[in-house]
Length: 223
Image 1 (cartoon, one colour):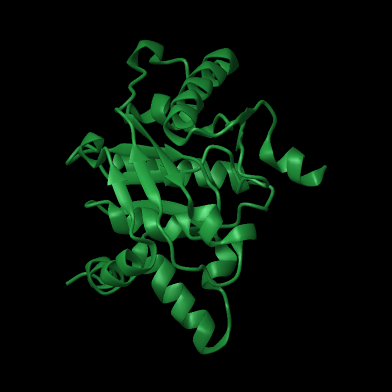
Image 2: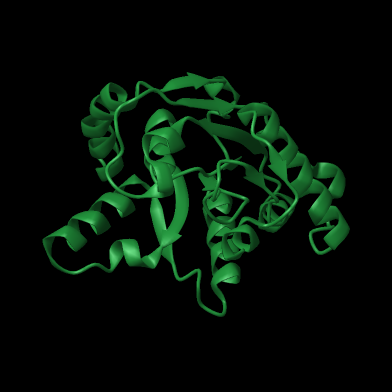
């Protein structure tokens, strides 16, 4: 049994008891081949719940600090996060964005599922913010379909994104796959990248019911 299968078998009953996740549209996720899961990001536990409710393993990037901690706690965190599919990347470095993009491309070229939050960070206030165009570059470079998803209610269980979450009900809603083959060869056209990104975010907004803000979440946090 792989570490992912072991963790899922152990954690799934616990998480289902704590969060009673209602999953809608899971049939929209292709059973094989490369897939990009793109959705909103409300709080830390999004990245724990998403891999558990998907039948296939979801690979995603995360802060390298999650796997570099010291002591027993640090080793356990590293074992857990790498086990559920996280690939650590120094996203704050000078080449963080490029490293994240290339990691996603490699995962997709291996025929796997790559999970991404196009907002780039957690929403500071529960609204949906402007998506960054890395999602568009990934789908245009690899031809992988994009399945939009929405996490609903996780911010109520873990306000502020830190501390122990409280029990409650969450919903994970998946939309129909989106493909952008009409833009083949245009992964460097900034207007195309913005159009693709905005169309994905529009689907996420429809699924989540969030208010949309045409501003990057990082800018909103800084303000």
